[in-house]
Image (cartoon, rainbow over all chains, first blue to last red; front, side, top):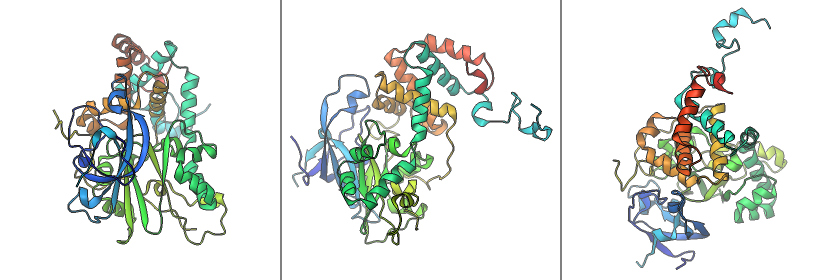
Length: 92
Length: 213
Length: 110
């Protein structure tokens, strides 16, 4: 499925061992889709020179206060590019 | 050619002035670089000319290129719109050879400041700005820029007011980011060329502000 | 092994000290490594992702004890060997040949 701008999403908490580009500090965190970047080949396969399927890449915006309980400025934001297979729709 | 004998302390074994690049003791990794280069040339993968051309192309890339883009955006509102919409196309429009880089420009405003980091490695918009500064690649910057960005900015001499929103961008995938700094006050009379001189490298990463006129 | 659920290179949010501000000018050998990395990708032998993967797998000790371009040339080598561009035998022989030319970087250029 494609997530639209403004959708609330949660980053998956999984930890497969290998070349992944979802930072550990964002696993399990909730943010909003800030923009849809489009289709890109999955770096998880590109890194090993095996055929790489295309995945939709999203920019997801997180509030600092939702990542760090003691953030100096909780309303500051953090944007990161996350591949679709690391995202679940956040129902809450 | 006669040498000045006062300089014997500073001469390398070759008899020429010491150059750290060439006259330091050969390391394992330097040997590997020479070996890889020669093997690739011998196998017809690359030519020495191509290697030199790539070095020259990288040397041509510097913060001055980014500064020109910023200055144009400050003086040409339609260009600024295009820059914010598609940074790559806007940079190419100005004649910069950025290759396949996907460039996203993020704008500093009266109430928003942007900061760029790559926590996972050191991704940087090198095809526009040239090679990144050493500090950008340090553990300290990569760890703390997403965790305590305002404290990091203070170390760079930037204090953000509490009512300003700081947006940190972690370059985790294919996008490369450039901050479009806010145009300094009192610069209405300046040409784009003069405006570009106010745009520092750090202001395009977010760890600095443009110079005052 | 490092913590598999929080690998060493995944640094965002880790505790760390003040940002070191010193910088260095790039040496010619470093610029050549950079060029070989870019050109090797253009030749299709590896991807930037493969380079990063090799850097990650090198481990934290390498990050602490090697310079940026020392790690890059090591990662470049890893990727080129995996791509079959040259064999370890070829690399070894070539490196010995080069060392025999002299004691400094300048002296061993052919």
